[in-house]
Image (tube, rainbow, N blue to C red; front, side, top):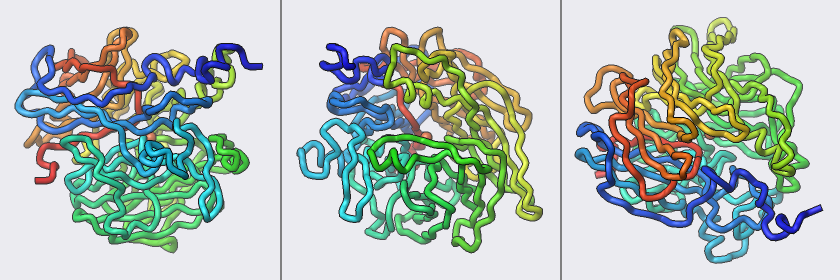
Length: 476
Ligand SMILES: [Fe+2]
């Protein structure tokens, strides 16, 4: 039975609208920010991070994954820094603002909406990921939506990106840009249909390839791998419950079957995919993939069970709290294209996630991967950054002060660098008092103090994924 408190606010017990998760209600532009330490003169570009930030106070029990997308960006230029945050104006966000038909409730709550073709659809928030392509940013959504092009200077929405009306359907978060060709290589999947799709958009914004890959049933992939010649698709035995989807609820179920990775040439079709079976597991995030002889190598974070005790204070939010804990360890898989064998090797037993690499090496062999370490709290909080040597599994920790919360970092390479880890790790961090700053850590002095702390005029809520955009990647 609802208490008086819950009658007034259905999220009164929802920890993911409070503390470091509480949304902010202002869009801010702040130039020439105060700095503790010194911003390296050579650090030039943009770190931008996406995340959920409900525009209206949710009127129903709210899922953290469902908030309107907001970008937070820090521009570095000539030793100075500027901050902006902007909501992402997806079509559904705009429909909400106008109160138009088709809006999924005025608060971004999971209210199913029926399209003419039938089946549930949800508010496309583009709140999950942001990638650089063709001089712009593309904001992407984790259940595959319409990409939203964003101006990297202002973080203002340019509009829904259909690549000149050539995009067949949707694009999932964690699609990637190939640093060598400038191509945007993407994947798509449907909540209730048994397929995934692969696609490529050229550096000048034209769709050059698209193919559907058949599956035994609807799947719930979260990421994909990219190498010089291949895409790696995830067919994992954790899926949405169809009954749940039809009620508009995110309910997951496990299937009694192995996990499979599908290695498909980037220009290939369903006939070309090679599937590699491995032990059942779920994977949210891939660090990087590459080719090595006959093998395709994938380093990713494999989920491990979390053993959170039930906490009565969260009541109906307890399942969400458990799912959001993201307990995972780094693992390397090797898929041999000649023998068909798939082997795996756990690199470490520390609990971490949100891996990032030097994006100039996406799809090519990398030695270094940067992860966040999870605090032993019931809620997800990043208490440290981890720099992994993927050859040995050795790890250097950069710890935040007690109680502080980190955010997925980005690696900013030093212009002209020849070594993979010559650059800085840039991230948004928040103090227990609720003040936020951007910290710049020298990646080659990883355990050392930040070289610069840029103080921000408002708190940056905990969020999802970000990227680094080099100054020379901005459209002229
Ligand atoms: Fe993700």
